[in-house]
Amino acid sequence: MAIQRTQPDDTVSDDERAWWKEAVVYQVYPRSFNDSDGDGVGDLQGLVDRLDYVASLGVDVIWLNPVYDSPQEDNGYDISDYQAIYEEFGTMEDWETLLEEVHDRDMKLIMDLVVNHTSRDHEWFVESRQGNPEYEEYYIWREGDGDDLPNNWESFFGGSAWEYDEEREAYYLHLYDTSQPDLDWSNEDVRQDVFDTIEWWLEKGIDGFRMDVINLLSKVDGLPDGDPDSEWVGSEHFIDGPEMTEYLAAMDEQVLSNYDIMTVGEMPQLTVEEAREYADADGPLDMAFHFQHTKLDYDGDERWAVGEWDLTELKEIIGRWQNGLQDEGWNALYWENHDQPRVVSRYGDPVNYRRESAKLLGTFMLTLCGTPYIYQGQELGMTNAPWESMDEMRDVDAINHARELIESAGHESYEDVQDVVAYRSRDNARTPMQWDDAENAGFTDGDPWIQVNPNHDEVNVEAAEADDDSVLNYYRDLVDLRERKDVLVYGAYDDLLPDHESVYAYTRTMTENGDTEQVLVVLNFFDERPTVELPVEYDEATLLLSNYDRADDAPDTVSLAPYEARIYRLD
Ligand code: GLC
Image (cartoon, rainbow, N blue to C red; front, side, top):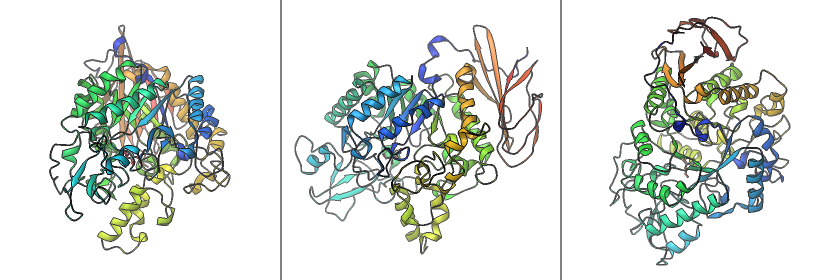
């Protein structure tokens, strides 16, 4: 057996293994998953009712978006009580039932940890704005008279990051919505309260956390102005700030290290070098979400403009992360989440090759090194929805930016900016899960809080279950393959065609106890019919999975159909 291009270190030892590396995660956005009581909003009981479906995917972990008490200005990322459940989602007993039912199915549950900011309705903020000495310094306040802003930092959702508070007669910082004031992490009492909250949930038996914008906790002293031309003004002073690793190390030491859990940080603007440092710093993070591959279809740095994307750039990004974290840290693999538009509508073809391209994109995500996160509906090949008017939109981010675009660029109405707003809106991920072809896609008996994608008459779980060739059943095969093949989890990644503009081909190679296993993945990302020669050597090639009906054939020269994906085992 001759293995082409074996990696210098493709061996895996026992202490490199971990349950969370071998896991596949399924993300549930409870507001849009399943409504059990007909109020138009998904809820915990609704999720419990669908747990058999989730388990049938073969996934190991559920990441649940925030279910804490909240005024829902940012759909639960504005928390008013960390230890209570939002009423429309259910009660703490419902949540306890959920945890039990998840564990009964041999899955794990991780919760969202949102501690860069709270809601303005949180008791800490209410006390803080009143100047109660105990909470006075819990948030980032700056004096001002309502005219001069403390600095030029911007909110991610548009506009200034400062809001003037009449009651305290001062400005508070909010890097997101005005309803989401940033906590002052330099205050030890804040840190202690947050650590206590984390411990409280861990004691309830959860299996880990997804940590919201966790690299934003530390702000540079003095809060200096940021570069006015940067993508997010001020970010060089609040992303990966000076105390970040110290805060995370303390969190780990005091709480997290006492539990066998998994943690994944959401880290805007993260680079591989920083990811390695975070991993190195012995912090609480097992892995982190970076955003580089989600910006390929921006126009330059501009999120609210759509640009052409380039496969070689995707290869370059993925290669950097795959190779960069091979010996230090671990990748979190994702295409979609509740903040990203549907991937088929971005990097696939939702009109002519929805099924093929959804499968191709799934093949890619589930055959890379790292822990894959499947977002609800991705396994159906759900697509972006039409957003015909602003009234249909719910997302504070999309609505704010649509308004800004209309005002700033001399546009007159929503129609003028509809193309980009409808393409980019986070609402695309938040349309209800499509269970069947009934009026509201089986999501609710009431009026859904957000429109149901009209294509639910065709794209839905019921139809997909009845179709052997569905995206859903293909995802099940992918998850199953990954669970059976360690090489797909741990194997070293090697890009075979870094410069090819439409075909992505890579091997994954792993050596354990002297035995080498190798898998070859070939992906045709476009509506073309290329033939490629692959620099692989093998005695025998076995086709493990493909999104077209293919017989085994030699993978050294491959002719591919549009959006074709193949996974071979090479011996
Ligand atoms: C994260 C969340 C997003 C939220 C923001 C503010 O990016 O994923 O949904 O709006 O943080 O909490």
